Image (cartoon, rainbow, N blue to C red; front, side, top):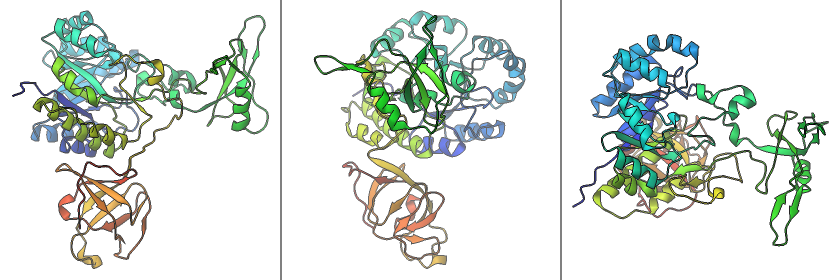
Length: 474
């Protein structure tokens, strides 16, 4: 019988609905942030009232609710911080997630009983740093994403009496655990103040640059006429050399100017390599296959990134990682089907990050700067059967609010906390009860044949036939 302790499953909550979905699909805890003091100032529903409601609902369900307050503060934030955090602390969150040493000191001096978790932004990469923060009164360390599994194990061995948390899924930054400067440099939105614009994933074209002979620096020049992406690519091709074994390399003496596709005329100097024109475009982290090892090491919490991601993302990742944790604790072997289920989420390609040492090309997506999905697509939310009689529908029918296009004949997956099933959609009606063949994207409502017990489920249109869920006949 396995005696392995189940690590906490920690999910992001950008809204109350996402918080509820996280709990419904298996999360033990969620984290949400104050917009002014967390690194998700945009797309964040949580104000003081929502934080209060979230904490109350979490505790009523026997779950935990952490408040993220992890910006790297400038003086103006120091001036207002204690005033603004006091009403949050009065709501009794299970912990504050913090990064700034000064803010941590201030909180611990005024409220020594408040649990503090050290954010990944603090870049903790070794056991000595863990011991330092433990002496400062921090209860949990969210370890840097730059650590390998062996390094995490060494930290656990050296620091047996403090909680450790590890990121296992979500976007990665090309910076030390998220301390990025690109967004601030390109368009004056500081990622460390919560306003990251993901500049590392924009699409860039290259142009030849003139070089100042005295300094060797590129001279930026505005383009004449309309932007021609194909011409820019052809020009870039002329700047490669090919070795005898067929490998292509950028000419070492060339300097280029980059132009972001959505900002024509704004040119910046940079070099280009054989993979294309992205500056830095990390793949997304996926470590579901390492859950058992992390549990064996004794990691206390497994964290999923994504406070700005969709409700579907929250539900899917919670469900998959819940199964992985339960399998690990029960001593069952890893189920590779979990990898396929995560392929159904929009992603930039997956990597195990630095948990395993891999060639550098395994960390970067050199093909696309946007998320894509190859297996399934979020199609809608099941609202329930209320109003069915009014439109003349008899039997098992539910109303769905669409999020993306789907049609009669599509294979749909019903994602529900009780288990997932598949449905071949043979009939559909519009909101007035009239037959339709196609449901357009959000915010259309349609009726589909499905038992009312699936109210609250999420629908996914299956792109590639999965083998995991049994087919539901209605």
